[in-house]
Image 1 (cartoon, each protein chain N blue to C red):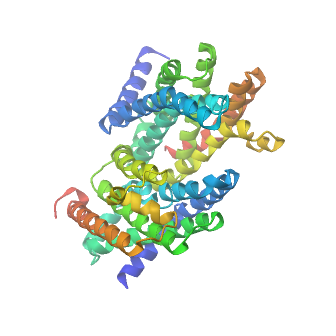
Image 2 (cartoon, rainbow over the protein chains, first blue to last red):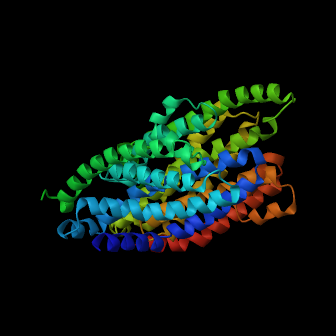
Image 3 (cartoon, rainbow over the protein chains, first blue to last red):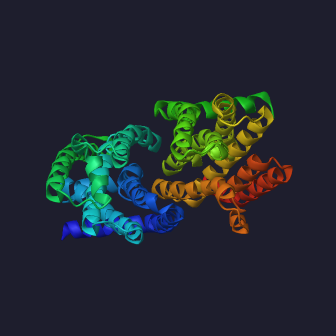
Length: 227
Length: 242
């Protein structure tokens, strides 16, 4: 029950701060852009747009979310409440996953995808992956500019190989890279779905433990003193 | 303004520079235009060579070279605008702006040290970057005017982000939203019908028209639209920093 309330609280927070409005506008712009493109480009363009924006929104917004929680003393309250570190992480992941999947499907549906199920799985994994990366960075920074400069290298490492992969450099070796698997799933490739999901799950478990370590440390240091 | 007034503004500006230097944002703001410049200077002509061979056409990307230039000219001010917005939002959240407004710097001085000075700095970087990496042969006057217009655009974007957001999260959402204004650069090139004038409230639209045709009317319209935005946002911005 506690986790449901946390997720609801996070979704309410995201709604209040305009995430849903921003993404309503961006969804319309993306669909418009896709439809003015030549037919042969549409599928790839839609996959890149969904991968780099709604799926990766956690990496873009997490710094601001955590910093605001720090300055509003929300983290101090959470630290002394029965909420566990894992629940805090899960709530952030699930709330952003919800909006990512809704926006991602809305963009993918009109452009057409080979397998909607694979696309949804890809967006969900992508969202969780980038939110966990965002949380790891956010737990270690003290300003938004610092968050941006730290997240840029992660964005380059996460975004460039998948784009090369999508444009033809599709060696099996590339599938070690989580971004390549995610973009492959988002573009509707349902081949080896189970295996690819298993690889991504392993990545998520690793990232979860790293995020857990840093978020726990952040809670212990809330208020400027080590608890 | 007396000498000591300049001095305190300078000190406040140096505090800002220290902040963004500490976060490596200063380095990134200067590095990003250079990397993009290298990409367009060497990557785009190479891509053009490949595409003209592949499609057996005389030119493919050449008519759009100026778009790459326009994105280059707005990149530096946009990076500094983002850095300024985030510093200001952080200072609002931490209550520092309230203290600043009762110091001899005042609200006006705060605006100058956090927005005007950074954009003068970005204007200089922009002129240098454009001179080195510009794809189309345009004059120094044109480069200076375009750099000035994009610095004003960065100023407006920062004012908008700070004025319309109540905190850092809303600030990020509005920063993302403000990215749509860059569509004004593309419209004159890709939408020939009158429908393109729907973007007439965007300074970037008139800037692109001016870069395309060089007509002074477009330059005046760009300045008028920009001044309109500044007047619209100034009062809200000033209220926000107390």
